[in-house]
Image (cartoon, rainbow, N blue to C red; front, side, top):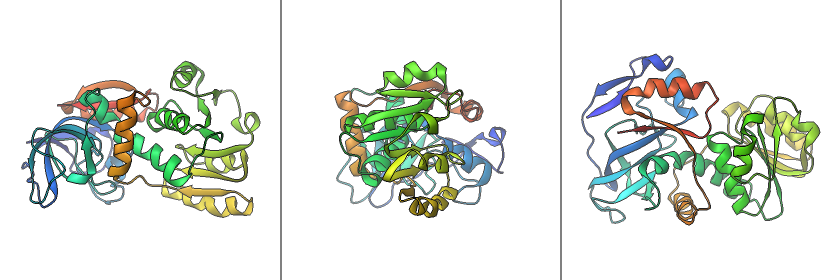
Length: 308
C-alpha cells in the first residue's frame, strides 16, 4: 500500500510516498481503509525531532474511513462501517496511508452528517478540547474560559465545547480572524497583535493555552484565585505548576489520549450540529510535505486534511 514515510528527521521535504505492507488486524483490532487523515502540529514535531518515539515514524493520528476487516474478538465494528477516531495516541499510528490497523475501541461510528474530510479533522482537536475542558478543568455553566489561538485547530473547537458547557468564552486571535472566532461562539475576542490580554481580561476560571512559552505565566495573572491554566503546548509547560501554586492558582500540562467515551461525546455533538470543524484546505496524500509547509506557517484557519 502507499503511505507517507521518512528516512531521516527534518523539514517537510523529508516526507515521501513509500510502499509498505498492508497491515493485518490483530486481536481486538480493525483494518480501516483510510478516506481522509488530518494534519496536526504534533505531526510537525514528530517529523522534525522524532517526538515521543525519538526516531522517524509513520505520521498521522486523525483518521476517517471504512472498516475493511476485523480481527479476532471484535464486536463493536463490522466490515463496511464508516468510522473515525485518533488511534494509538500518543504511540505512533501511521494514518497517512491507504490502510491503518487500529484498536477497535479507539474508533467510533462516523456521524452520517459528516463527510470523511470533516470527520478526519475532528478527533485530535476535539478530544484535546474535551479532555482539557471536561476531564481536566471540569468547566461548569457560568464560568469564564479564555482560549488562546482561538482560530486554530484546537482553539476553534475548544470555543464551541466551552459554550456547550455553558461557559462565557473569550478568545485571542489576530484581528482578521475575529469574525470567524465569534462565528464559532466566542463572546469576546482579543486581538493579541495590538492588545495585551493580561490588561484586557480578569477573573477567568480556566485558560486553555495551546501556545506555550510566556503565555502560561502570563495567563496566571488573569485567573481568579483557584483558577486553572491547562497547558497543551509541550512538556516544558509542566514547570508552571510551581509558580501557579505559589500564586494560589493551578496549572496542568495535558497530553491528549485515545478515548472512545470522549469520541462518542464528540460524535454526538457533531451529529447534533453543536460542534463543527473548519477545514482550511484538503490536499491529496502525495502532497503531505506541502501540507506540513502550509501548516507550519501558523496562519491556517482550522484544519488541513489529506485525502485518499
